Image (cartoon, rainbow, N blue to C red; front, side, top):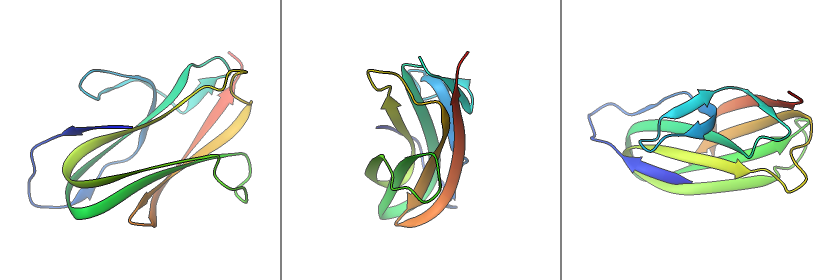
Length: 122
């Protein structure tokens, strides 16, 4: 995960999560999509936020399959102000499992967004 600082203004805001195949040097999404392939090298997600108070924490939880399962990957970062957070996963050596995945984003332990993605054959 990486962050990129931006200037701050007054109102707190969190923009919708974007999933994409690649991320540019200035944290812009390249090939935004919710569908990935078994041979995709990585799955990227970007989340922009503005004017969050100090000691805020963003957490991304990655799930495969059913809603009842435990996350297979969790990443957290302390944040404040205005920034972009980049959460990503590299493909397993054997490739991604076919099926649905879910990314849940939490701000200070409160779920603020859920994004469904699909991994399939080309």
